Amino acid sequence: MPTSTAAQKRAQAKGDYDAFLAMCPSRQLLDRISDKWVALIMAALGSDGPQQPGHESTGESRSMRYSELSRRLAGISQKMLTQTLRSLERDGLVTRTVTPTVPITVTYELTDLGLSLHHLMHGIKAWAEAHMDTVLANREQYDTHTA
Image 1: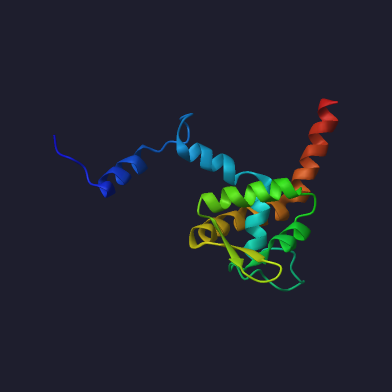
Image 2: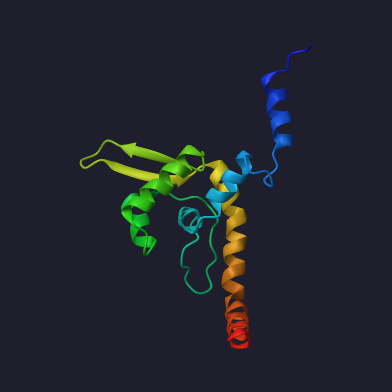
C-alpha cells in the first residue's frame, strides 16, 4: 500500500470537508465566523467602521489596541472580547503583538487569512445595512399578519 505525502493527505482532507456533516471541522469554523462579535471585530480591524459621508472603507487591515476595540464594539464584555480575540488568533485570522513598553502595549491586526475573510464579511455587512429597511418592513408586516 503506497504511503501518502503530507500534501496529499491535506488535499484529500480538503476534499472530504462537508459542513453538512456534524463532526466536520468546517462546521465549527462556520459556527465561529457567524458569531456577531467575530463579524464586528473583523469589521473593526478591517477599517470597516463608521465612515464619513462620501468616504469608503479602505478594506485594509489596521492595528488596534484592546481598549480601542472595546470602545468601538459597544456592548461587548471584557470576557467576550478576550475570548473572541483568542479564538481568532488560534484560527490564524488575527495576530496579537505585544510591545514591551510601560505599560505593555498589545495590538491586534488581521492576518492575510483574516483579511481574505474580511472581504467576504464586508459584503454581508454592506448587504445588511443596505436592506435593513426592507427587512424591518417585512418583520412588521409578518408580525401584523400573525398577531
